[in-house]
Image (cartoon, rainbow, N blue to C red):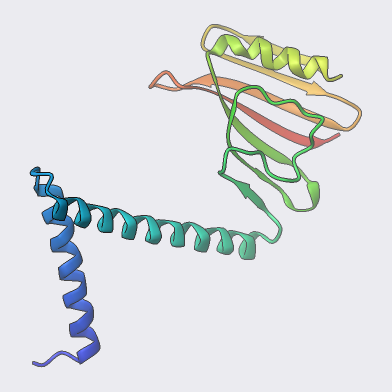
Length: 169
């Protein structure tokens, strides 16, 4: 049975990419050709991945209508600046029309919950229901404009993250 020309070309291209990837991963000689092939494979994977990421973002925007996602180390653009964040921002999301926000940060240790709570209180937020130990912490913080539910947890690998859930008051 003869394959249509476009299917044959696609099959050959896929086989070539697979062979190049396999060859690049199996060679440990470090020759210039190996480096070029490895660079091309890495570049192709990066282009495909970024294309998928942009497609997913577009799909989320279309499906959820106005939801804002952030994965670039910054909180969502609409995140209220009067809510102080402690740690390195990992990402977050915002509901449509400023209905709420979530931001996740990486912090040094679970003891940093006290620093995050102090930053919120220093910005005029009143604390309630605060509880913490050496591995975690939780508290609700309110101002006239926002409620912030702050939780800090340590995962199985020892990474400590703070999650800020912010809603209008």
